[in-house]
Image (cartoon, rainbow over all chains, first blue to last red):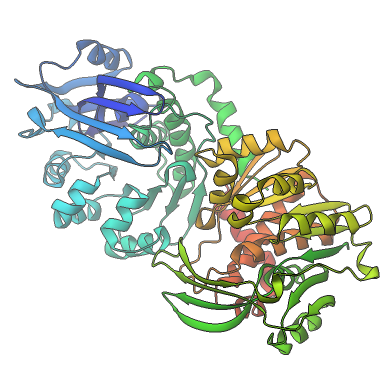
Length: 302
Length: 302
């Protein structure tokens, strides 16, 4: 089993969806990712929160075997995000973003993190992603993610991150924004042209599933057909966590195993959206995962 | 091999896409459908055009073995439609609709059409769909389609059509409109509740592929990953034609074979969008269809 180092955001979120409203609930890409990945593998966590971040979340992470030596509690307030989802759950309005302690975050890596075999560069400033990348000793696999804010504000640095990654995970809309192409196929082609060392580009298309290509092979996987979504926040990070977790536990980074990793990522994401904040991920049921895997196979086989 | 009776629209279209602009080109649901279905099976055609409809299109249909005895040429002008596609090809604006001879169309069925085993009720007024349905002697399989105009203007009659159908083929957006549900899964559930005799509901999701369910089993198929789409007009009708054509040639209407029919439908649609009007369908290449079928299998297998 390989160890995953994840760096990303830690937040306290206010979320409103057609199912309800919650305030100051734990969130952030690194929190969702690490809880998801911990179902499959060992995780070394790097992130920053303020003194107001609930201690029981860190305790939960430790219970799940997540190493939080690199989880810095800084003086001040935790990063805050507030969003409201539309009726169709496909779109959301960001109502508030307060960087707080995240603003001056400089990731510090405990010595025993530096031999992590897999590096997951979650959604933070691309220059910080590069800093972390430089400090890891010969990672076997680098996976990166981003969000539209960095595509708009640090495009060159972001491309540098992707060029140094083996796998890039990105939303369909963000990929179109980043490449200026109108559909996910031509956008994927352009991204692979620009970042020719990528072993796989993973395009998350929400309820339409995921598209993966290495420029040669192509793979489509539908999303788990959920009838009710309570809270889509963190779905992409949970997908990435299950995806990376499977690659870590198997140590197999082939395209064929990347396809399987997408199935585990999708199953993990389906738990995440089943409840607000990280509550859904807490309810992850490992005993039925083979059943869920087979359900995906049945849904896609003809 | 079973015979398909198709009834639907015949048109002359003006189409503008990012790839170019054409005027007064042949179109209409029944024209696309029958050319697509004729790649796989026998088709009996019912429709109306005006005296301005090009004779060479009817000649082409006959060459393809389509029976056009039920193709009425009425005094006056052919139905006209004009549309402009947006840059992303997902949306279009209808610039003009002139019903012309289509306005007073009453389908007349030649005697030797009445034992057609499969009935495809293309997009026409639901009350006319019901009329045709009543005149066919014990069809083995009834497949229906519609468009948003009839959902808005004849919802009760339309539900009656679907209740009398075995398979209902519909666009994702139209299904949402028809059921008032915000996503294709809950919308599908509602449709199957209301029309409980449906053997399959086929939801066309454009570049995201197709979703099929009978309320018990579920199936997802991605779209053919085309890099360039010249003209999306008729893609749905071409899908339905390939889909129905495969069911007709095999005579097997099981859910398992309906899945395979979706693959043939998607391959057929991929030819249709490859050129303006019906030109793409003319270029259909039967010699590589097994190869294309296997490509779908590879894209979806993990």
